[in-house]
Length: 213
Length: 318
Image 1 (spheres, chains in turn cyan, yellow):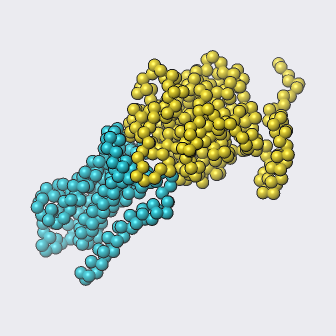
Image 2 (cartoon, helix red, strand yellow; image 1 turned 180 degrees about the vertical axis):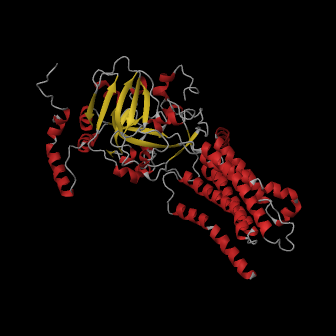
């Protein structure tokens, strides 16, 4: 049984690296098009976002399926979001700007879409480095508070994405996202409460959290 | 009541001396068309190709060594009538109908009218213009356009002194243009505008070709504006109408987001877009670990055009 779980975990990790291999493949075969720098930014940023959505989806899925073994995977996917976001930032600094700090400074100061990317990355970075069980233990109650910032990171990342498009679709989408997040948050809590009232609380799980996380 | 007894011969039916001299070439071309099964219409494409086998280079041309590979310019297109990405227009554009093509010139002119493109081409002196092109999205390229001065065309319609602005309108073909069909994003057809002195400036051209060939459809065939010191969205594609006006027209992007896209849209590294910096640009085709190019005021054409904006606050008139 333990062996199977480990296999599944290894398989998941391997699959999560496929997008990176895919990027390397496209670089090697010159598949990134005329503006390959932009293509690389979009590719890595998209995958950071996708892993962020997967991470956020774990809790509701866990609630619905009542399967409790997914917390580890939530951490894993969160770390992959952190991984791709870090590559995204690194590609910007090293591959695109070649550490030309003066130009980087001007670019960041004058580009509000980058501010939101920066906010998202600072949050994801903080969550990434405090994701271990040891950190969870030592942070105690504030760990949960800190990790709830993932919703802010998701919102900031979405604005970062839409604000670099020529047509500003961000404003309507921004409000849509907020509504979606608030409703989603409440739906999860409502769903959990409903389930709790219906099913017997398993032994040793009496202190189960009723909050979404 | 005026009764016209003599029917004017339309310009399109007058044989140009050059064409007459080149009739052997035309016969050969016709034979080739019959062999390949191409239709034999009165096509501006043939006129264009006959004329520009040896076009002279404009005095404003940039260094030929900096020219962007043609494949990049042909496969990285902003054509919002077709798609909002840059990959799809090259294939979607192929269903556009661009032959025959005519351009309506009207408004504050002595001689308004509709001109067949082949007639315009016969009238104008084609040149090659190697221009830098800077998109508002902070990428850039260098393109060898083939075209003629917009001012020369406007002069044939005899602008009145009341003409202060020029409005250009793009083609409306919803059956071939998915975003027009869905009324998506911008108000269609696409509209752009210039001040009359900008339109008459010798740098401002109407292009019918690039890289020594007819303009590809995704690049704005058969006739597009190129204003090299302004952001790319000013250089309207597939022009069908040119109007001279007393008042400034409202351009499509300006209408969509007036605080982001101004009427002037001059390339200016010191005036950022509200959401991103315009300080540097990424030339198409540049490799990894290559620093961005520093963007120049008026895209490097300041010597030629700065006087047009002498007393203007460029931050206000962005």
